[in-house]
Length: 581
Image 1 (cartoon, rainbow, N blue to C red):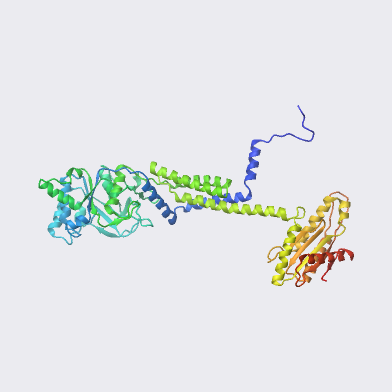
Image 2: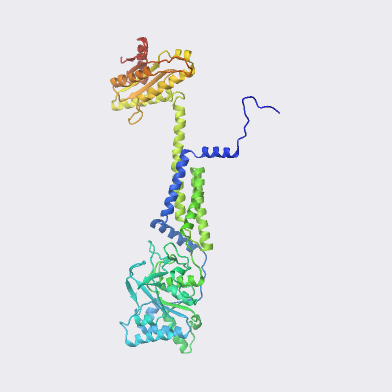
């Protein structure tokens, strides 16, 4: 077995160390900013995902899901009796005398209807005493008639009475419930108040009262209500495909005519057994329309019937709690964040689209299979914002990479100054600017005096230190920001440097920049690492030349600056010379 050479140690890197190294390499400062941006967006969404415009968009997706899913269960115990256009034409113009409603209540009582719900308001005014007494007598005989109550304003405070039946009828009704709804901002009814406050009591919705009485149960108080309410204590209505497709629909006039035919011994398409032990909802179907997710013109009895059907079939839509909704958002954020941190560009866009589609499919599956409405829009908006953040940080990263490689190509590795290829390009551009806007333009050439002696006496390492220090002094003397055309400094040769200056007059170039550089370097004391070695100083000579009016060849300016530099060298070095001829 070969021995490890002396001075080398074979050490196996542990898994934890390698993992830590990869994490450090992966989480660059830009990625950390991206991650913190993701976290900030997530926190904002957790607190504001239920804003009005987001909720409005999500409601539209809810409507699409509702139309796309399969048929909901339908209770056969609900029957609709509509005052439609046909009935209005057959009987007389609305409102009708109360004898017609008394006749309908009597017919349904004789046919064995279990519950009769009038979605109408009865008052004693406008009818004869005989009609009023006929309807009141039928209320007393039937004992199964329900009446509605509605309010002017909607909410849980300061309800104002708008309409209700006279107290004589209300006292004989089996139950009274409210029929108020608050449409969403788009005007569509999707939720119902289970209870509202009226006369210091909680009044249940008419559909709640009818459904629980039909099941032989008491309406539970709010504290014991097991229905899946949303965060605002509203019940999301489970709409069926069509309001009158729940069980059966009959025009009001057809029932009156059918009853008359049966009494005469004639055949009738209306069968009494279709109403036995049923809930019979009576109301206007020619007007009183409300917008629902499935129909732009659903009558009031259609809304009440859907609520009754939902309770009878126990087919509810459950809205996740705040904690569950937050968990869903966090899950989406983790998946989107993991993807966006790993890839960018077109692949990130495709991945974001795939995540959004996957969430939409998962949400639809939960809605159709488990009757759980998690929502779609907040999660997709979160993914879109993550994609936007990823795109912005990706562009920043690309720009930084381009600038890095540009600097590698344009700057001298040792001094950090521009190489002559870039300086030559800038020289042409700066001259064009100076000629176009009639601005002065100057060139400074600097050369370190007796630099070869520094290398010979102190070594090339010390020589490199001197070159770096000279470059630092030059950079400190020029302005690269805040100017239309920035000052440019480059490495012209081994120990030569060039400075291009646009917009400065000759005096400023000579005494404000060239002389400042020369005097600053003259005062710097250099020392080697070896103890006991004496310190030393370096000096530079500088040549200055300016652009002549009408001159178009940039090389001539540089040539005059070189002649000025040679003049400074010949005059004893460590000085600045000017060449304008």
